[in-house]
Length: 134
Length: 134
Length: 134
Length: 134
Image (cartoon, rainbow over all chains, first blue to last red; front, side, top):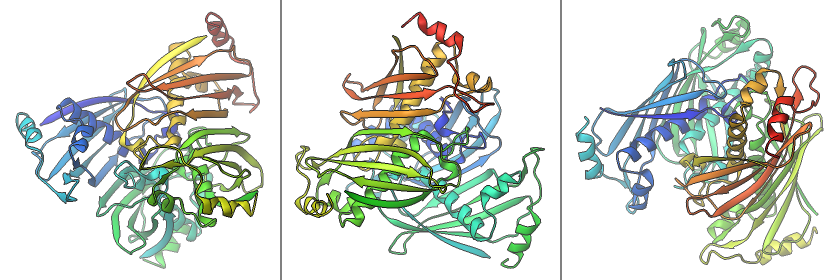
């Protein structure tokens, strides 16, 4: 398993009139988690796109256990637990300052060859790198 | 089953650099679907909140079949298929102009008594109203 | 002067923990105003982009007189008061249901030739169309 | 003059189909700038709200000189150049990695007593703290 940890502050823009971080913002927070996980692995998402590989999300789910509030300093744990094929799955957990788990979820992304528009296998270098951990 | 139909335009603000409607925006689109479904049923979400009932989301999942693009005129179908208990589940499908299904998903929300902060049963009037359809 | 009127509902996603529509959302609302104004004039923004003309915003200002609240049904008035050159200016006013003016502002956009990346004159057809009103 | 520097990464969620960081996102970025400036001064915005002082924005303007792109690491400079009265003005400049100035702007916020809903003077401690710099 590969694990990456990322911190993130809840901003006014994220809050809603219940005082909660709006449920729809976590898709962005999970994006930050997986992009920084890939960067730490040496595969910045931008470099992949520049080399003609797109990674659209095909599946996203999240369970909310407790709300995050304004100015909370959150920790996003991002996990890659399975070796990628033409798909790569990221699991996430978000915790607040008091180490309370606020939500958890997963996204599945597909490697797409930008030129052909068709799915393709995970780049070999990324696969080999992940093999060390999984 | 109760079904509600709502149209919605993809704005520049929604797009990302792939030219897609960013995957995180659909939480907002689904919000619009369920709020307008409740309004049509005679239970504006705002009136519920004003009467001391909160409805936080506890579960959200979505599968993406195809992207929406800038200026697409989308149709959101919102369904209530089961009678609510202390929870209410909404199912969604989003279609583009060409009647292509772009994604589908579901959210589960919990009725919370604002004063006690505790879960409560679905308001009887809403339950009775939905009984006609389900 | 050309004037266009557009209605828009404040969603939960737009609110913040003060209960206000977050101040940063009005850029999106003004976008909706000007895009629908251009559509009504017969110049959908998307068609302009498809024909190789980009319209980035170079200047945006807004004065907030009163907040919008959750579920408010807003009216966006968009005005074109001056004939466009290589730039086009839109003025905006947003009103709530009680016809209270909530904010007003303006954006200036530049016509950019996508191929050259250089500014260009307003397309003649749009200029001629606006001449009828201004 | 008081000056604060904050870094920030452009995320996929921020981009639009031109490949730019959407013009409407800078209101959030400026929020981050001023909130972190106040935190550094020892006046976390959240503590002010908790003590019954609200700070809504009454004026926002921005000039865009060049776009930010996906994954750019931006620097937000936030300045307080004038001593606050019942209002406090923040000036901002955003730079990219190549130290190119991308945009600049300002926001004016009003100190509001939450109980009365009326404007109030800047809290004395904040005023005294800023006097050292201005």
